[in-house]
Length: 506
Image (tube, rainbow, N blue to C red; front, side, top):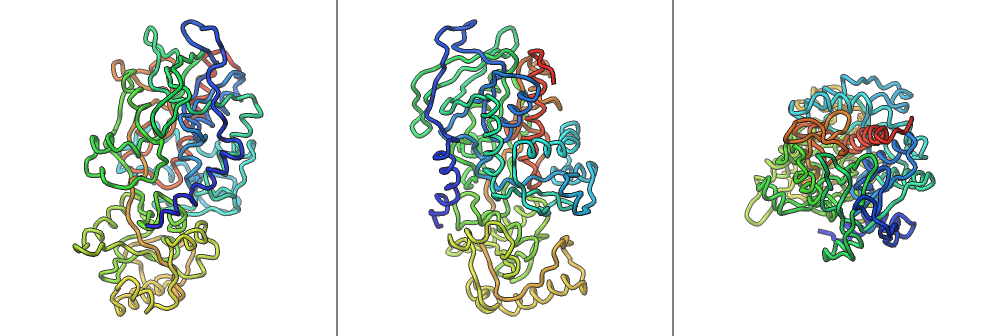
């Protein structure tokens, strides 16, 4: 494994630190306590990724002036900064401009199929119906998008918008700057440990300020109150090995793609406050991950193109074993079967490869090739030799796939072909292994992003949540590019509804 991938993958995040998205910690500025709190704000948002930023944006648009975003880590943005930033939504302006036929109903059908029907219907409809509306926020905040719409696995139409920077940072930075210009306060190194309730209503948060995630120390504790609500947008807990091995022991040893701060303390705080949990033992595996890079690096981004315009094979047989554009769970399970054919001294990693033509427009390729995650093979013989693939079987498989591309043969796996790219040397390949990527379960919410009480099964007053910390929208598994949109849709909803509690007018 090339450990330099982690450094290079996160160099953009380090750039955020230098550029101001990570500031020196400043603790509570109000010396006098207000109703038992060190300071009080119109709204307190916990987490500074897509969901937290969308919540703040919506609150600003609703008229709130005193908005505080708390972030546990030194740098703002969390996993949202590190992801590829793909946003899959129906009926976007770019989709319409390219004549792509889509609908809310098609989006929901795809979600239900990927989620194995475990989706909460009202949440899934809210997602699909409101998703097109996030484009207005992206435009106003200056988010730059590439002039392309691509299809990710499990989608029945090309829907994914791609940031110009080909990274979640291309979304986080512009929105962060817009919020700062509109007076939103950001406070980092502040670990929220629990919610403060009074008479069954959430009034604020208890937190450790000056928090150092490396050693768990902090400068002091503080209580921060709210005039409207607390909105929890803390993301998933994929790096919390103790929580993973307790809820899903089979995944305890899997590498995770999340940033190191993705732990479960805020989830525990929500449960302690009486929030209703849903599907906490459900996790998604990323089928585009590679053993040759740490977490999900540029190779994972490139893999989406290799799946769409190339094929994935079992090196023992030289044959395809799945629809390369099926939903993530289907592909991950297929890859695990191939890995199950490993021998004592050799892991049978599945292989994905494509032609050089694909690399000319695939995001992530240059970095993945440079970092040793993607490899070049001048001939089919070189490709077979590198992975010890039976050459006759490999040649036959390539020939059959090219007949599929040419329309002369039916694909037994029924992969959609938006780009009909013939497989020809030189080839570019990468090894695959599923990695823990997303927490499917979480806290139960209403379509208004209200957190549901385990005791009353009704909303807990003054408490909202959005993003990966919640569950139910996607069911058992989610489609690619939908996490970012989930965060934005329910963040916008949470901010609007929280602002109404203090009488702000939209």
